[in-house]
Amino acid sequence: MKTIIKNRRGNILILFGLLLIVIIGIAALATDVGRWYTVRSELSKSVDAAGLAGAKTIGQTLNQGTYLTLAEDFGYANFPDNLLTQKTGQEKGLTFTATEDGANHSVTVTGSVGALGTLSRIFVGDMVSASNNATAKKNKVEIMLVLDRSGSMSGTKIRDLKTAAKSFVTFFEDTQDTDKMGLVSFATTSRVDLALGTNYVTAINNKITAMSADGATITEDAVEQAGGQLSDQSGLNADQRIQQYVIFFSDGMPTALRDSFKYNNTDYDGVAVGQGSSGHANCRTSDYSYMSVVSALYKPSSGTYSGVDPSITGDGKSTATTSCRRTTCVGRPPRCTTSGYSNTKWYIFEADRLGPVSGYSAESCSIPTNKLIPYFCNAARQLALNNARTLKDRYIKIFVIGLGNTGSGGDIDEDFLTSISSGAEYTFIAPDSSDLQAIFNQIAKEIKLRLVQ
Image (cartoon, rainbow, N blue to C red):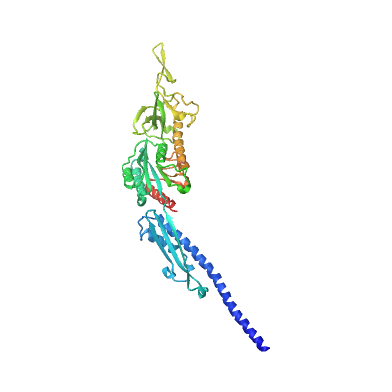
């Protein structure tokens, strides 16, 4: 009987030993499986970061190595050392390899690692391998530069602008074979100096170098001209749109506007310019006395005077048929005659446009200057805001750079510039022209960051 009991005790010891091995194995897996999942998760994050870093710097010359080397370095830097118990570098069994698809401007990073176990290595060996990869691509982009070359930009300001703008253009040199850029400049009139297209760096920089400062500031037409170069993508899904940007720069208030006018029964596409008493255009909302008259109508194509005076308002008909008439008296006793006089009809006064000057009809004759000037200045601003809104509704992002002092009586109106832009984060104010290069470079870098997916 005693022998049988002893044998049973031996069986229990054997069973306990076997169960202990199973319990230790389960504990090992419970400890290490979590580690393996963590390693895989961190590897995925590391290759994502590496791919984005590489794509952001595609084609750029770096201080050390290439953008592929940078991508691999980002992979190593983003993988936590404390997850692996081995030494650093490839002694961990950790590797990152970056490759480029030049045709698609993308970088693919592949990462692999051996996840070293603790207790579980007794059962499954030294390591469990894990691998992952990520591809980051730089999206295509269309950019229109819009630069102020009005008279107030003369001297140091336009020289600094040229340096900053050319630096911005050159920043995109590495992808100019697929990305597109164009240039609009503006003063009394706006012009498309270079249509939107590829391989633009040399051509745009040559146009910027040739710019000279003179004339008024036609903000609204410059914005419209830039928008005309960018395709309308409002009907496309977000994932189908090319990213489009307008980079707008100015150092002053709008002092000119382009619209249709009638003079002597003839319609003109003309630019009305405000003329200040000093001979320079001003449109400061705080003091309209800076401007004495809306002086002349210029041809948008050439910037030359058309012979039309827009400050004498009316119905725009010939002197024989116009309702605008004046009485002239000569002699003693006076002999008086009434006759029509030349005048200009502003189509912008129509109810379906901006509407008439307050207190007057759309065809009122000889609206007083002190009433016409505030209307003109507000119209120049409102048309610019309307044109900017049209672009933003088409998902075009607008960066705005203002040069000069803000506040009452200042050179620029920060609230107005912010309203043109796509928001406060898209608005930059440069108190001095020496600040322009840093701002243009910052915008260039921001755009490149936005292009990576």
